[in-house]
Length: 310
Image (cartoon, rainbow, N blue to C red; front, side, top):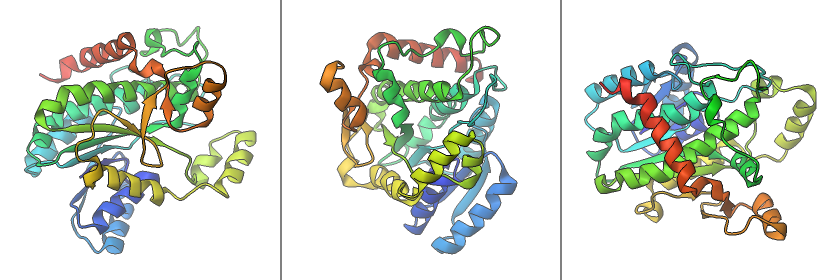
């Protein structure tokens, strides 16, 4: 199993869970110095020496290509791929671009996972039960607002000097992009037996380091929510269940909530039903299954990685 961003938070808890269950875990992390301690802790706690640490910056196509080449040369197959790493820099007010000049949220949360899956698809197809899981978010509920749109005209910072930047909007937009790709990729890889699903992650306890990046108002709110928010280990258990259980063995192209229920696209987004959509966890915005929107993110994804497939 490959888990991106496995050095902290839910990714770290998931790496521990899989290792404790006897899996061979590959922690795909950007900072090896920081991550090596997490790797050692997981091996000791899980009593499993088969925890590898490999360098990966999911925002960089070159890094993804280097990682994928190294992985496929080292290992005979891949059973489970969990795209857990994400970029959300609380308090960030300026556009940040990836090495390929893509807005950093989309590079990390959308196009990076898409490219990585493309490069590892052949190794996944060698598994008897290959599964891919995308870490999504409740932030996609912002698309219940009919005015909300992905800024397709600004994903390379084209309007960075004239349009205000919101790290939270870009995070939500990029995760909506990932959800739409989940549906399309499930169709694309179905003939190869590869299942592709997304998990709508609910609130979990945030680290002190993450909270410190927020402004004072949100810090107070975050500390208050942390009193009742569940630990990352609970969501890690859900990662494990979706990726290993018989219940989800034949499930693909779905968004799954924290209750392990399949979420359905909203059929009505007005009045009382809209309030239920926003407050509940059983529906997602119809924006995600609009064929025009899906085709747009799919075409753009393929266009951006075209030169890196050679």
